[in-house]
Length: 93
Image (tube, rainbow, N blue to C red; front, top):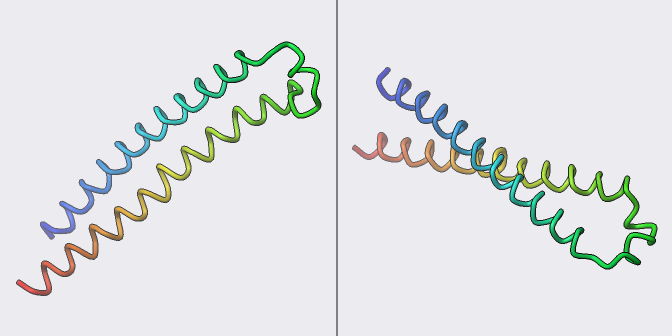
């Protein structure tokens, strides 16, 4: 039962820390993308791919993708690695 409680605490800590990290990384990506957009010449905004709707969509979707990769994919990978390591330690001690 001690292993189960420890695992639960570690999962909660992992979810909280990865969620915070993903939020900060998404914020940095949005800021960098916005800075890159604002550094463009005026004529760049006349192009179809630089319309207001496409830029807003890009700002929101890219940040969501980055957040998903960090929080979900990395979280699952760390969880599997931790579970495998714990299982091997328990099995061979």
